[in-house]
Image (tube, rainbow, N blue to C red; front, side, top):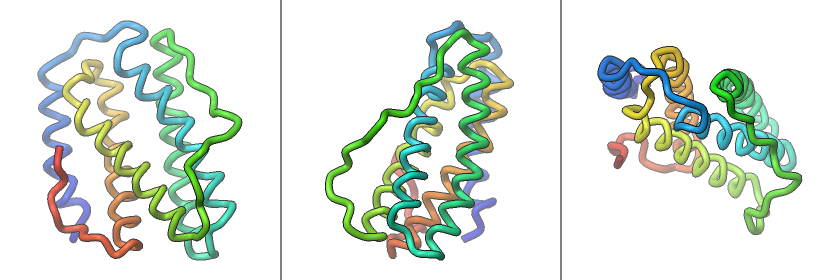
Length: 163
């Protein structure tokens, strides 16, 4: 499946949301919250991949890491600009037993799917055009990451997302 075609409908939905509203929000509203939560989970995902992944999976993870650093930087900029404070990563996380690279892929896929859904289901709440313009490529990356991880797990990538 061509990811560009797959993402086209979501781009349209985000653009429609962008055109509906043009009023900047205050600190503490949705834009600040998304950035604060996202950067901590990205750091966790990177640490876990590096601990147990094989060479091919690590190469994939490092590519995703570059995307996530870009997302973190963009979101941190907006959180600070709107008067918020980005959340620092926790010193440790408990995700139960992770015994294999497959467990890591499953964890990463669930985190990517959660991030994807967070952006998609909240798109209509983004009222600042600049923030919405930054959110669209992040959503596209999250969808791409989720599709790749679903393929690695042998999951169906042709079913429509439920949102």
